[in-house]
Amino acid sequence: MRLLTRTLLVTSAVLAPLTAAVPGASAAPGCASSVPYVSGEGGYAAYRIPAAVSTPRGTVLAFAEGRRGGAGDSGDIDVVLRRSADGGCTWGPLTVVAAGDGDTRGNPAPVVDPRSGAVVLLTSYNGGDVTEAQIMRGEVTPGQSRRVFVQRSRDDGRRFTEPREITAQVKHPSWRWYATGPGHALALTRGPYAGRLVVPANHSASPPPGSPDTGREPRYYGAHALLSDDGGRTWRTGSVDDSYDGTHNANESTAAQLPDGAIYFNARDQHGTSPGHRLDSTSRDGGATLDRPYAVQPALNDVPVVQGSVLQLPGRGGPLLFSGPSVPTARRDMAVWRSTDGGATFTKALTLSRQPAAYSDLVPLGRKTVGILYETGVRGTYETIAFRRVPAGDL
Image (tube, rainbow, N blue to C red; front, side, top):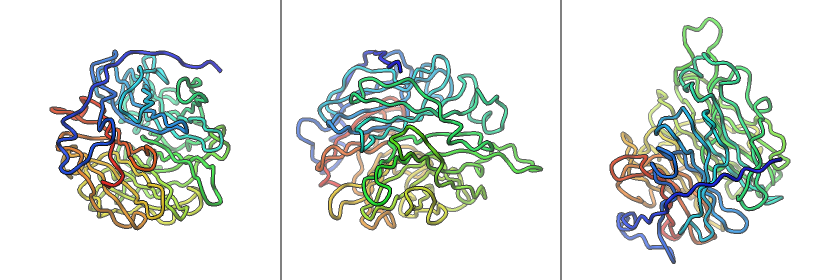
């Protein structure tokens, strides 16, 4: 298959003020923070939707959506990538991994296949002149609606194969909206399902026959998981949240494997009637089913309606981390929480800054450092996508 090799140049700046904004935070050796994406540079009006993984060679891959027309969710959007060989201190040139060519490609959900070491990337697509609202109302053709694609890199993220469509394998015919991730996906490393790739995702369902609803109502959002047991070559749908009752409206979701082998799922609650903005559940069969329906995680009530990220730190007694903004009514004050009981409860461990902030993704940088790739700015939320190195001891 032909490999994509388009490259653009984007300035890499240093976010010195971020370090000072965190009382008591210690800087990692060499650097504390950097800015891989600056809106308005590299031919893109805005960069959004960060996702990050670390390869077996220690290279950090920072994915994002390059939005040509502005910060909006529709239009001409590419999936872009920058690579770092020094733990996120400096970044190589920007590469276009999946070109929109006038359409919308986004929601990057990367994962490293533990068997081959290949980087597997799932993304979502829709026509550039349609919106999420139109798709949820069922007003677009199948070709312009949401579709799902997979790519692979066998050379440490330098080049990726062309997007290969897997929509028929993973999208139920009654679903309308569909989004992979966004944020890193999960490779199971222990237990009977070791080697399985698990991609958290979300969808919207069609209203039942005779309903006066249009399908745009938040109650029709649901979370689900995509599963692959052959390194990303074939896929199927695993667990599906299909309550659609308006109480818990699971939207963008994220996952981590706990020390006992279970999968912890955490999802954005899109204006459900229950109190709180975060939902969670677990799976003990490798993501095929949920142990219980999604329910509110009250320890994360400070998080607004927004995407978030989870990461299980390695080692005996390593905590489960969650990242997201920490003002319930605004996207700002990016923070990291920790859980020492498998996600039953969380405690805020660190506030990274008091600036506007939105989407984020957590990535391990060896055993002593954690990286966080997140949207932030001084005056606006989507001015930059910054990368922050945090010593694990601070968490």
